[in-house]
Length: 368
Image 1 (tube, rainbow, N blue to C red):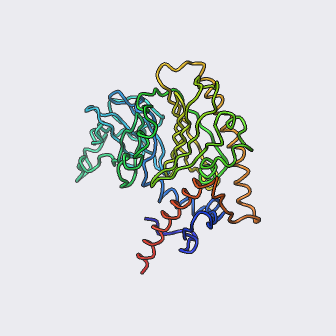
Image 2 (spheres, rainbow, N blue to C red):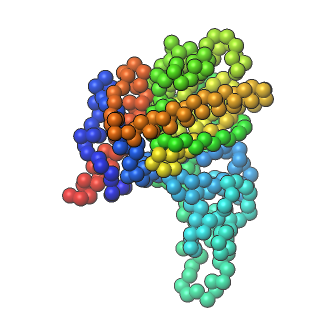
Image 3 (cartoon, rainbow, N blue to C red):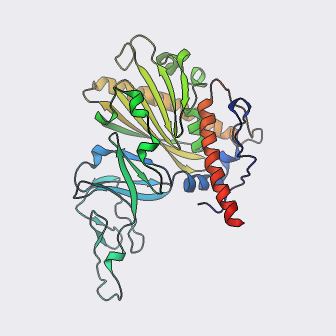
């Protein structure tokens, strides 16, 4: 648990009803201490999306990533089980893999050649025959929690509960659509000059749609746009406008799920788009966009969807970068919520306060 907390007080962590609440202070978006706190507190103890399970279907298939600033690697072992490890050799910290994905019969450190089996046990140790009191059984790879949900792979660096507890109710709500039967198509990356919480706030409300996303407003039935909140996630739901659209359906539904702290599941007819927001620095984040489609989806629809999504994303990038600059201005500290249009933002910021409060309470006990 964090011991060196940024400037937090129980007063700033107080949760008021939506109609009377203020937004979180600007320092939470701009101070380096909060960037470090978020990485240790939020991203180290939550299920973090890695990628499609189809990329890890074969024995020896692996995918490397960085979670909460830690290098990790997920691999399919000889017993067809997913395994996850820190991508760190136990000798002197060298990397086991340096590319994003591939296949291997063994994992070999790229620094001094120590070799590990796919079950994480140490096998080969070059030039260690004269080293006293060395037992290979003491130097296996450090494991992580890993699981698969609906064809997607997640890892957890901490002791979080099951992924099923986190996402309970989502699959029932979107039925008969079955995410596990969708096929992974492509990954896009966006680097955004804003704090990760700015990007999340922006995602969690439709208030800005008429101003920032007029083309998206033409797709959604904005009059029936609603936000629902649950213990670990929120949902923004809207029917599609009646008539032809790029998804080839005269009607349909849009489900925009946000799973705390940084996962988005954007579900439209024929398509799942997974977003993972990765904090990079206090004022920069990277957003991973993975696209999945119902098998047999027309290639032209996939192309149109990707182009449409990119236009929407670039509109969000521009406004989020402007907001970051505004949050760093001496003219701003805290604002107020629209009780009608911003319950999703309020819900996220309440969850953030609850997490910070837990850290502050435990730190206070430790100092007593």
